[in-house]
Image (cartoon, rainbow, N blue to C red; front, side, top):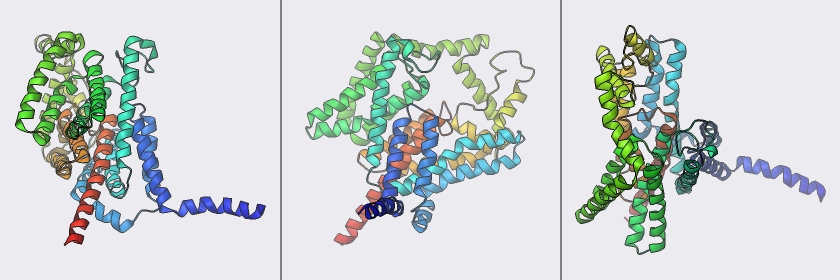
Length: 426
């Protein structure tokens, strides 16, 4: 009896190892953990990203995966990474800088794998719930840190920042706040008032933190754009008009009671004036200077750019001999996704970048929560990339990869099931 029990104990792990369903579940769990870790940790996300890809390999259907790779939604991110890799050949930067510049694009390799996996998985919604729950917990910690800065894990952190920074946190909170508008509207239409109230409370918690604790100027610009997209796609004109009037009234009230909002908006003009009059080093002034120089670099090599990792070297050359602080800044990121790509890989890189955004936007045509989440992730990334390089930034880049990858796979699965149902009915 003992020998039989020992034999069963030895055989069970082997069966689990050979069971495809066990591996699919493992990938789902790792993806859920990655989404939950995203607001909190950089190193944990990197580790879980590698583990997630590795656990997909043992029972990967090569033929099906190859078919998935030939879709435009997969070809575009792979092409952008490939261009970053090949672009090291014509760059004048040191090889260390060239290879380092390839790294930010490497996360795009995960997108085709996520499309493939979540086209077959049943747990895609769990990934979004994990991210939402994790961000809701971050609201609690952010508010606590605002009252007691000693609670912050990051030394000398900004007010209300428990970990990471205010730009990353604002990206998370603004995405969650606007994403909740769709389920709240659906619950109201179905007269499920308790769930609608829960969505409203969560939405107001995210917005209140951004208004009264800490926010970024990028989020202030993009939230109205995302809400406008929601209204145009999912509401009638009368509802849009009422929401617009309500938003104006709410904005006026927030402006009256929120010193944080007034101070953040005031920096737009004050920093621009300081840059224009005194050539002072301000956030807005630096961006204008970065963009002006980047356009000049792009004009010098408009077709294939200066090569991977060339940006910092070009800024070093442009800064030599300049006495004012604004013109003497040396950076490797011009804080604009299009210019970041244009300087390194020229018009070819811009075409691939925009083809990727467009293919992913078209992927999320249609109604439903999953389509709304995927569309919102792409829209947020496109507009915030006007002020940052959010495809290549670690945190925002992974938000894009996970949001588009998981929602995209679920959209592909829904369309396949719809096609099968129509074929069966015919």
